[in-house]
Image 1: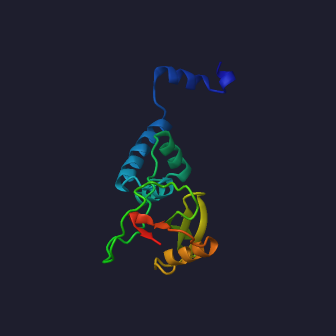
Image 2 (image 1 turned 90 degrees about the vertical axis):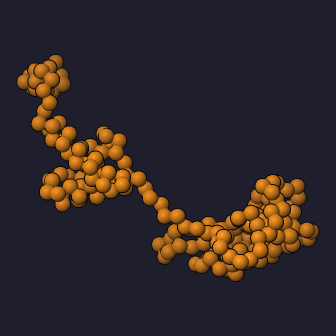
Image 3 (image 1 turned 30 degrees about the vertical axis):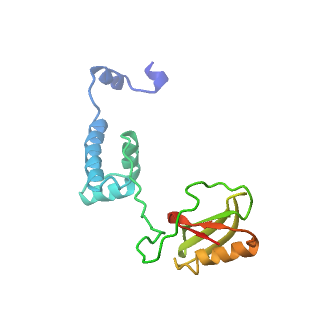
Length: 184
């Protein structure tokens, strides 16, 4: 049986005794240190940073070994995403009445448009994308890409494109994020 599994006889008999190998004991100690560093980092460090922290404590270990032990113990780094606010709620302007009241359906095109702003990370920095949709056919009828959150560069520019692509011929509700709506 030892030949089939390519194991030594002495190793097989040692495993029957239940003795723990030197490597397994080292891994247990190392895993305790990994858990300690992981906890210190508020669970944000992955194997590269934990390896660096352990080396700063004079523990000689490779990153692949740390990664393997972390994976076996199901220790993962928590990804912290920075929150970027795209809605300015602290302004002195009047907030329009919510005419849609969360009813995002329309029977005919040109009856209700909705708009929202999101941000996109690029190699050059953050860009703000504003999109205007017609609720009847759910098609993008206007959009604007801007480096700033100024209304003239975002919402106004997207709304201008929308009115060029689909001229307003009847009463229209334009609904933007934060529940604000304006009748045109």
